[in-house]
Length: 98
View 1 (tube, rainbow, N blue to C red):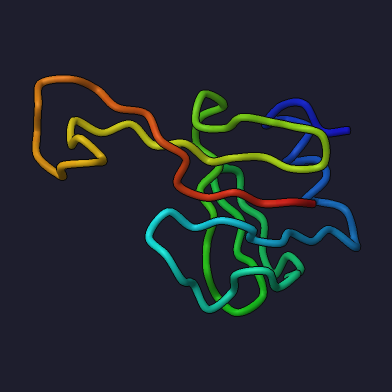
View 2 (view 1 turned 60 degrees about the vertical axis):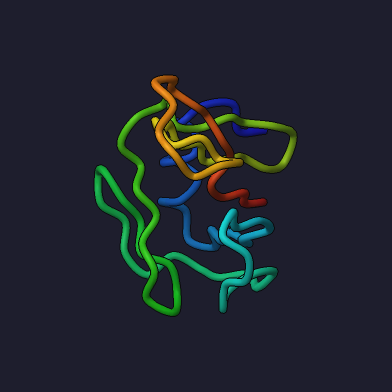
């Protein structure tokens, strides 16, 4: 089981590593629910088959679960009103299973 960003990077470096995007905050995504392999792994990002990149910058941007992980984002925009309200809001941007 992958429990942190370091372990995720090690997994992505293996020969048969793949990820499946299961959630995208902004609705539809052309790769939603499609399992994709790793095309290129760098220290701070991974390129998945089909050309999209996943940033691997900060461990605090990830929440790991059993067999999956969420990529979170922090913003001063209220996710319900889309206006700045002086608070920092945290929301799930992407969810993947491995």
